[in-house]
Length: 84
Image (cartoon, rainbow, N blue to C red; front, side, top):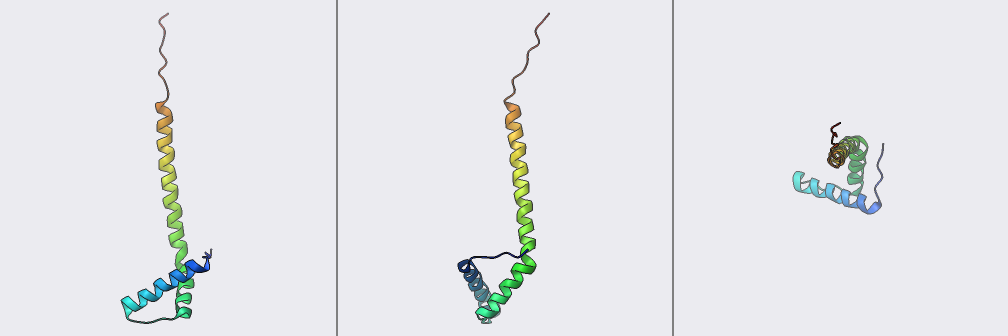
């Protein structure tokens, strides 16, 4: 799976990479290197983050369903047994 970002988002991500290299490694990288690094991250590492997001979303949905089931069960009314 390969994720495509709008150009504006891609440029923002590239700027973050360039800032990281400059701040943390004291290296300046250009647009081509930043784009290559971003493409690598999206292609090779992106699926790990994406899959974790899917699992997190699944957990939230399961919690909401469990809560909804409890709320629905709370609506039940007791049935009284009449004496015969």
